[in-house]
Every structure is written in C-alpha cells, then in structure tokens.
Image (tube, rainbow, N blue to C red; front, top):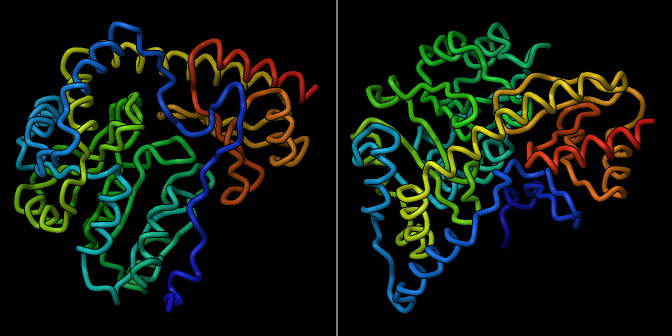
Length: 347
C-alpha cells in the first residue's frame, strides 16, 4: 500500500516542451568542439561496461578536491545534488523535527522533507527576495526544525541571501546546508566555515558548468560530517562513464569550461540590461546563470506559450511566484533569439 506521504506529494516539475531554443533548465549552453568529443569517445571506449566502477570514485574525488581546495576526505559525491539533499534530509535530526527553508526556492528541499514525513517550515522572502529574518527566527523558535536549506544564489530569484542573516539563523542551533549550485557564477561561498563546523555543509554540482548529463553532485563538509553522510551513500552511485568523462573535463579541458562560464556571466549582464528596456517587465538582478522577471501586461503562462510559438522555451515560474518567468542564459545567438521573440510577442 502506498504511503499517504507519497500520495500527497506533487512531483518535481521539469520542462520537456520541444523548442528550437531551450533556455529553461539553467544548463551551461556549451558546444564541445570535435576534438573534445573525440577524446571523450576514446576514453569512454576503454570502459569495461560489464564491470562496476570505483565505488568511492577516488580519482574523481581527488581531482574535485584539488579544484575546490579541500581534502578528499571533506567530500561526498552524489548522483546530482538531489541525492545529497535526500541524504541530508534523512541524516540530520529525527523525523519528528522539521526542515526550514525560505520560499520561493529549489523545490527538492520541500519534496525530500515531505517524502520522509518531516514538517516543512517555510517563510516567505521579503520584498527584496532576501531572508525575512524576523519571521524566520519566529518560525524556527516556534517549530524547532533541525535542518535548514539555503540556495545561494537562490533559485529562482537569482540573488544571494544576506550572509549575516544566514549566520544568525545558523546560531539558532540548526544544521545549515548552503546549496552553492551556482557558485561559478556568483563566486560567493561559505566554504571557509563549512569545512570547520559540525553543523554546516556546502553543496555544489558539475551540472551548471556543462556536465548536467553526468549527474555529479558534491557535498563539502568537515571530515567527521562527510564520513557520517558517506555511510548512507548508495553503492556505485557515480557511474563509470560519469567518472571517466568528469575526470577528463576537469583536467584537460577545465580552462575551456571556465571560458564558457565567463561568457555566460558577460551575457547575463547584457541580457539583463536588454530586459530592462521592456516597460512591460519587472526584471530582477542575478548572480546565477539565469534571470527572473515578472510580466505586467499579461499572464506569465500566456507569455510562456507565445514564446514557445516563436521557438523559444523558458521556464514559467508562476506556480511558485506570482506572474514570474525565468530565462537561462545561453549562447549569444540563443539570447538574441529570446530577446527578438520577446520583443515580437510583447509589441
């Protein structure tokens, strides 16, 4: 018999609509040249597909640790950050204590909590999309959650919350998870604290820097905390191809990836300034690889459909934020196509 907890869940929404230009999933829009694809194919061809991969992904973990600047013992790898969020929601505190997070934010925090029967403790962001500290403290003191998630920068709003506010909540005796999935675009981090504290960890991912298909999430923590979380990790959770390809891209072709990340940062600023010229829109600054905006002249779902008709797919966020849409930053020609389509449907 299926649990009532599961029956009451709403599934995570993904965007699968077919479109010529897809700017809906916050991926790094990158074209790997043939010489990189050929090297990947050559390395993948060596994989003994009938064999299990290294269950600890030791070589990949070593490379990631060098890139991040911590010891391999500070790292736990997951099948995407989603798996690590699930582990943390299981591991931290007892299930009769809730999970805190400001909203709107990444839906997996809520989904993981509800799967386990943990009460979601949600507090709306303030008018600047920052943490409402007064209401957050009130909710935490009243409901006594054990675990807190902070998307940093926040998805879908694109901004980094006030570091001082996060630190004040941290001192309320919660275990804090700082989800830095978009770190490469913000360069802001709690790394110096997370590797020293008993009740803070960081999440990062390779998905936002061109490797979404590999599903490699990264948890960074004090060694003792990483050791405990690693006990829960499912065997062989990082596939053989994922380990091989990620190792290659993070060593021989890392500079190429970072060049493309920097292009996205430049394009983000260009697209943001272009969006400001549309009087029908309210546009919000971003430190991630996407931009959130609200529509004044029509319903967000209507604009979303019109853009699809023009061959451009972005994300309708109106189910969690009134009349809002989110556009991922792509290559310059993709961004131009989006702006051209937007100009057409808004005129």
